Image (cartoon, rainbow, N blue to C red; front, side, top):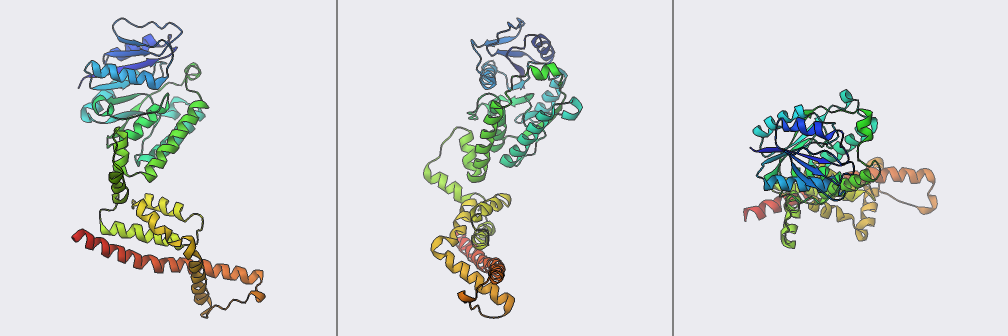
Length: 374
């Protein structure tokens, strides 16, 4: 393993020399000056990349990673230049990278002990939640810039985001490709002058990160894992291959195909009109069932047959509650009777959904078994 430390800097001339000296005690250092206007003093024994104007943190990191790979480094530890990170924590990353050389290591900060502002804690909690939704991986900190990247596998990822959204997208796409994303406890400083010196834009950057999170979560819901992995590595699949991925994800066993069909049929008839597809997809995602099969099965209640299901549910529900055949007389209809019929329809819909879903599951199971055997 041949590690280095990358320090992107933009107008942190006062703190940079100490940060560089601390990092140099453990690894060679690459400094990326992102168009600073405060004339930072860069030690002569570091590798320097200098931009004529500010391009943002994503551009600085990309340039640092490319230079590190060019110089033959295998791992790159990134640190902020404002002094928030402790160079004494670098050995913890190096030790973990020795044990897990292919993992992306993320610093996890103790916000309470560091006295982090409430806004930072809330923003990080939101990012952690959506990172877990998009990847299924629980991580104690999704925004820390103190990380260790395995350059070989990481540089194969296609990451389109700029500025601070780059780091969040890198986590999600790394997890989608199967790269382990592991936590390393680190310390952090949150003195008032450091918080004021941050270049994070509370409105603009949060909007960009939120838009990114929405896009990636939607991909996690609707795009099969193998297709997401291909996209994250910059590849493309033919329409036929993509369609195969859509209908084969979580459909390897007949039981799972039957479960997807049964869930779709149940949600298509259940009394949740207007939310049937959304509920079906959410449950399919939660239970790891094939979403395409579930969505197709939920369309059993398309408009031409919807009235028949509504009337059938009412007939069944009325019979369940009264042990009698429904006889609706419009001239005798009152508000109380309409509410009574509504309750009967609701109960009847649930029972009818089960009556249709169970045979549907059995048929789907049998057909899948037959097809697999042939």
